[in-house]
Structure formats: structure tokens, C-alpha cells
Image (cartoon, rainbow, N blue to C red; front, top):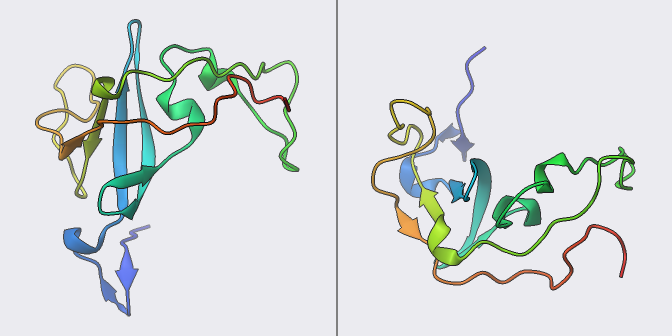
Length: 123
């Protein structure tokens, strides 16, 4: 099956694409998430995508949105902004060994605005 983004009945161009790739480099690993461009200088992504260290990736939810136990729920502190790399376009360059987005990012994060809660549990 072939899919492509469509806007007003025609395939979208890179200039129209508001979905970006967010790569978070951590001490022990790297993760890749999607992010939505909601203003010229503001992205929206899931909180677990920007944490400094895992076990954030072990968080799972039930279909009703409640926390699936025993997956955890501890998110931890945010990564420093300089560890977040933003890539645009349909086929960003990939690192040869890891296959993760690489090359020159379209942008680097300068600030993170996140919930002060380090857990998915209600405060």
C-alpha cells in the first residue's frame, strides 16, 4: 500500500508538512518520536519523547487512557534542549550504522516547556 500526505486534494510538499522527526540523544540511548509544528518556533510532542533517561519508554496505557500496570509511569526529568534534534522532510538523511535520522538537523531545540510532574500518575 502506498500513502502520501494530501492537502486540498493534491500531494503536500515539504513546505506544507507540519510533522517533524524529533531525535533525543541520551547518555545510554537515542529515541525518535514525531512532533507537530504548531507555531513557527514551537513543537508539540509526547512528554516521554523528551525525557533525559528511560524507563519512560516503558509507559503503556489502556484504551481508556489509564495507566497499564505494571508498565511504570515514571517519566523523569527533561533532556537538556541541546540533546533534541529536529528533522524535516519526507526522507531525512540517516546515520549509516544506527539508521536513525542524522546529518544536519533542520533545527535544534533551545527551550523545553513541559509539565513539572515527573510521573504519569495524578499529582
